[in-house]
View (cartoon, rainbow, N blue to C red):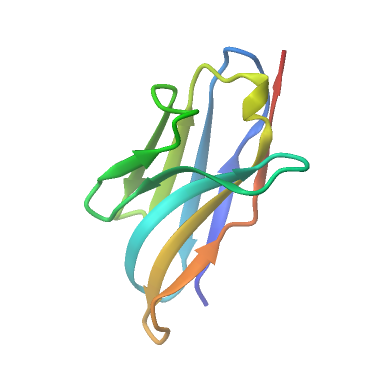
Length: 120
């Protein structure tokens, strides 16, 4: 079965950096758009950044210039480099991808989530 497994995250001081990774595994035929979302306590899940299979990126205004999304299509992995972090970036971060499996139609998948905490 197809799944997304996240790594990275943790606790960092304001101004610091973290890198998140998310690897797709299983019987995969194609991976389309990949992205990162986050959900802070008491708030709705929001888009952070997306990247197409061709490398076109899109960012939320709140992270432009600080975060960078990238992907390695051979490793089936998407990354989120987060720089100049501030306490407002504290949230659970989720990766997301549209994937067509060998025996499964194109479907949307979520990673397990990883906590990012930025201290002032």
